[in-house]
Amino acid sequence: MVPLSWYIVLSAVMFCIGVFGFLARRNLLIIFISIELMLNSVNISLVAFSHYLQSMTGQILVFFVIAVAAAEAAIGLAIIIAYYKNNPTIKVDEINLLKG
Amino acid sequence: MTLPQLFFTYFAISMTILSVLVVTRRNPVHSVLWMLVLFIHIAALYLFLNAEFLAAVQIIVYAGARLVLFVFVIMLLNLKKEKTEKKYQDQWPVGAGISLLMIIFFVLIMGKITELPALGKYSIEAIQSEGSLMTIGKVLYTEYILPFEIASVILLVAIIGAVVLAKKRIE
Image (cartoon, helix red, strand yellow):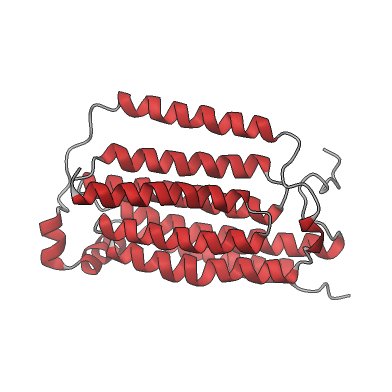
């Protein structure tokens, strides 16, 4: 039997790698992929909890996470394409139209 | 070390390596392809946790639809300059530091978890007697019917939003 904590540590490590990719990369697409990585790592921990607590809630939650993440990816990629049409770059440090 | 633990160790090590590969590749297409391998590993881990339905959804939705969407967008954008420019933003050491701190934080609070809630009624035997899909469907369409409906509205918003954002402006 694999202990529950192993799954949680794996999930935490994957999440933190995703955080690093999100904070450090310049390419907007890779940043999006990092978000996917973080969502998936959370899904792993939810399924693990669902299995070890013998409850169905975790799996249902993963189902909704997948649905909402699909919406997020579709909208986000559409925004990237719309931006790229006006201003052909996807480097986050060059996207500074608002001068923030 | 028992056989399941050995399997898990393989999955944990390869998934960590694959995650690092995903966030560090220069070419986004390579990133997406490593992501594909990673998703297949995650689906295998779901099978390990008796979540057959989610394993199938993981392969179909993530590997089948989402990554194809990513590859389409990469092909639509012209990323030739990518090969010569720097990969990381100037503040990347801060990002690395934050993610290291988060790993330490998560592992530290792991040790503090001593009490888990009471076990639910969906033991492996209960799921096996009814079937995995039947069980998840029953819970989804009774207890979680309102979130399910809201999810459908969110997906509708995503469909309309994506079309509105990506279409040509009509003068």
